[in-house]
Image 1 (cartoon, helix red, strand yellow):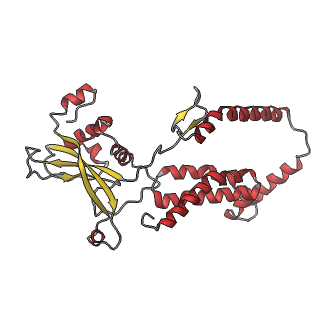
Image 2 (cartoon, rainbow, N blue to C red; image 1 turned 90 degrees about the vertical axis):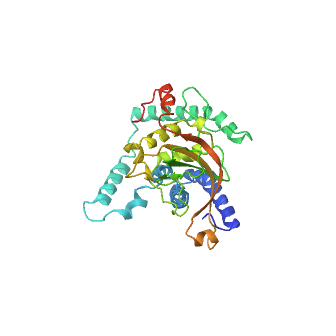
Image 3 (cartoon, helix red, strand yellow; image 1 turned 120 degrees about the horizontal axis):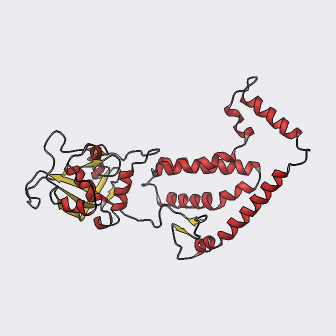
Length: 312
């Protein structure tokens, strides 16, 4: 998908806007359009699952669309045998149709008043949300009332055009500044690291640590102190932390004396190009250090100041 021609990406963008901004109104245009809405939304999410690797988010988005399909549209999924689900559903519908002429109980009118009142309240509270949506300086991930009934939510307030990654490296060298020191990399289960490792298919899983490492690369380690916490656990070779990693270069030997974070810019190799012919899925360029070399003894005060249990 990434290497598709420019016109295809423009078409993707057009389809995205159509499905997210136009198709939802199909819900109010009768049964057939409601079913079409459900089909388009589910197909759209499946395409995102295949191409976007946003893990469980797209699966959750599919769930509300299931409500677009009534008994008749889902009937083909069930057996037509006597006494089966289809027959029982048909009997229930007949009973419901036979009782349509009966006067509605008092409780139905109460529910209608409550539903309409709630709808009017939501519409009123949503006015600032809509105004924010139309504003050129739109604010993301914000609530507009103390009860947080309405808000603006976006997984991404902005989109970057480059992918940067933090790579954790360890060494057994006594001096981390020794130019001859050999630094070995810890690979995570799914995020880019080893240039020759094919990108994994995440969905429907959510590799939380990999996800956090991606966001940490947008900021500094001072803004993401947990990454130093992780470095300490890797220095101590704690099993729980290592279970979240794909590879441990120090398995079966002495733990690393030092760990550092290096900052790289990653991009896909060109199919048919030199790097791809060497089996590389990625090309990377070093940006600089992300955090300096740290050892377990040097992190002791850092852990104590934050009341973190010191790794043993």
